[in-house]
Image (tube, rainbow, N blue to C red):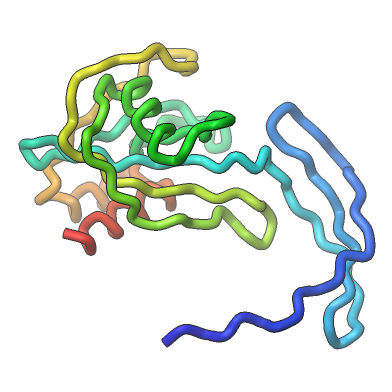
Length: 183
């Protein structure tokens, strides 16, 4: 059953940039809700291009993951390849490029699993989760500061992957569960 969206979003009375970096803008929003209640919210505004997270599956029914450094948690996390959509790219083009940069494969077959929001109460970013099959070897140089560790994981052992202590990123967990559901 689909829930009806709230019919009247709050009116934005004003915005103010309170901080800015090369990646994000933090702004306050002065809002007036349909019942007259006024509040100030803060949000992080990204670049608006969106991002992709790719679930590559080999012909041997293995998932390809990467272990990479995550500055937010100051540790290494196991997850699926991902990256920003470059200007002028479609999500599918970005998915193939990121695969080539991060794991050394392209894909002949892409299936969109879901477009998800990332912390929509605070952040205006979206990510396209895409399954990739019919892989072929091809490498592009990427923008990572160090080589990523590429990890092959049997898809049949997806529940053990969920138990891995460094497989905690919500986007990768959601992608895995979406893939399992689609199969």
